[in-house]
Image (cartoon, rainbow, N blue to C red; front, side, top):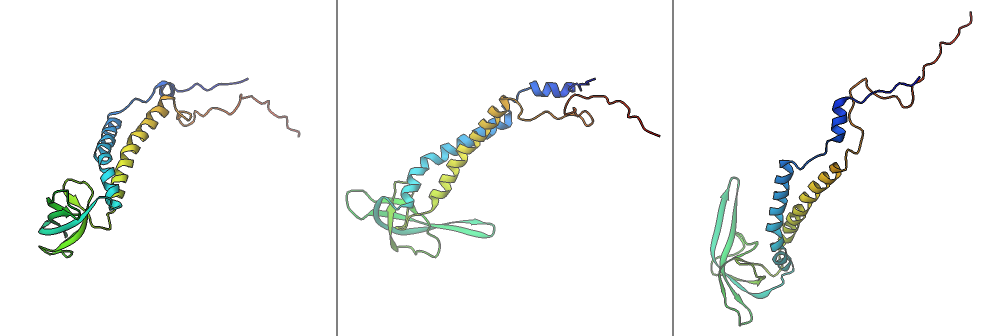
Length: 185
C-alpha cells in the first residue's frame, strides 16, 4: 500500500509565487546607472592621461591648494599651462595631477601634458587614475547585470525544492507495508 505525503499549503503557494522586482533592486539599478553616467565619459580622458597622450607643454606653479582631513592633508598645485608648440592658447588655473606640497614651489615650471580635461594637466609620466574610472564603470555594469540575473532566474521558478516542515519529508519511493516476520522458537 503506498502512501503519499501532501505538500504543505504554504510550500505550494511559494512554488507558484514568482519574485518581483523589489524596491531594493530598483535602488541598486539606479546606483549602477549613476556609476555608468559618471565613469563612462571619463574613460577616454583617463586613458589618454595614462598614456600621457595630449598636447605637451609647460606647467607653471602659482598656488598650492590644500584640504585638511583628520589625520592627513591633501594638496595640489594650481597654475598655468602653456603648450610647447604655439597655436593653442595657454590655460590658466589648472591643477597638475599628482603634485603635492613637496613637489613644486611657486613660480617653478615642469613638463606637463594637456589631455583635454577642463581643470587638470598631467606630468609626462601619465597617471594611474584610469584604474579607478574603469572599476567604477565595471561596477556600474555589474550591479544591473546581477539584478537582472536575479530577477530572470527567479521568474523561471525556484531552482530547488521548496522547504518542508521537519517530519514531513516524502519517502524516496512508494511506501510498502511489510508483513511481520515469523520468528522461530
